[in-house]
Length: 277
Image 1 (spheres, rainbow, N blue to C red):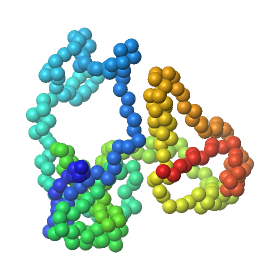
Image 2 (tube, helix red, strand yellow):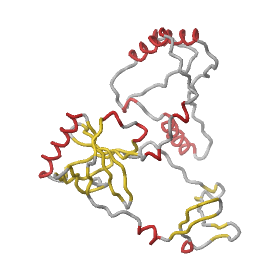
Image 3 (cartoon, rainbow, N blue to C red):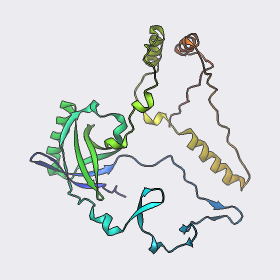
Image 4 (cartoon, rainbow, N blue to C red):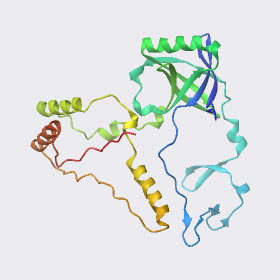
């Protein structure tokens, strides 16, 4: 089955319009979902809409409410909510261009592939792609989807373009609130050299297929064993990382880094094993 486009419209740069289609670049894969089951009967548990002090209610009596204060709600009906939804203009206007490294990774949420809608759009599409690549810039705009406006960034990716949905400023917590207690001391030069040597030793090209979700792999094995065991209890042995000692001093850190560079085992946490698909 052909992939369904997330959005169809045109990218506009000044007087140039490029018809495009946007498709999700990611998919859910590793997650395993569970249903709640009534063990004596083996049947799934269902849920009823219940109001405290009243009991089960009719779904037709449910409206949406925004909590202004504890226990105080402003009620809105669907027409009032629909009235403020933005009309999809089917146009993504590139309003600004910024250096590719200027957008903090915290703002990125979800990527989409952008492809030309037809052969006629391909020339302008390629020009935009190469212009972004040569200038090392990212195009910013706002995309209307399902009545809401998303902040997005457009960047080159191989032979195509990738659109990445960004968080708005009020959706990102300020880092200073979490890092203010981290000291300003400069690291020991020898320790820093060892850490850089270790990083160089373990550096290499990124290949996502080198990594697996070991929890999901183990959970799938348990499910398979459980199915064969016909209800009997089964347990999966999973190697746990060793305990991390607290209060270590510079000498301990130096020894651990040297041993790591030499490839020797230490009492520090073991690195996660990697398996190729």
